[in-house]
View (cartoon, rainbow, N blue to C red):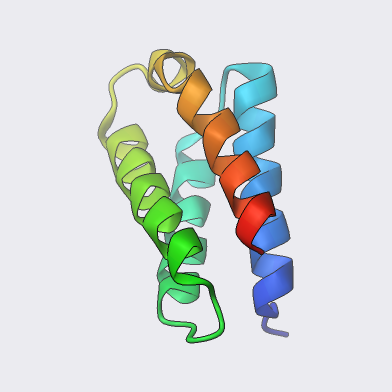
Length: 92
């Protein structure tokens, strides 16, 4: 059963919030972020301001997948993680 865009946005926010709170994550989470962002980017009902944030999250997830120290990557992006969740909340 496919997720609706609201469900995808909530899942995206949950993963970002968990990584921000726990200061750790997994490559599988980064891959999930990547899939969610790709799906939301092609959705015409998603606000363009959110799409700007989604592009940043996509880049973050790509860097996380390639990172040799994912926890450090997450730690160094703490401010962005919080900012992205707030921004998504504001426009969704």
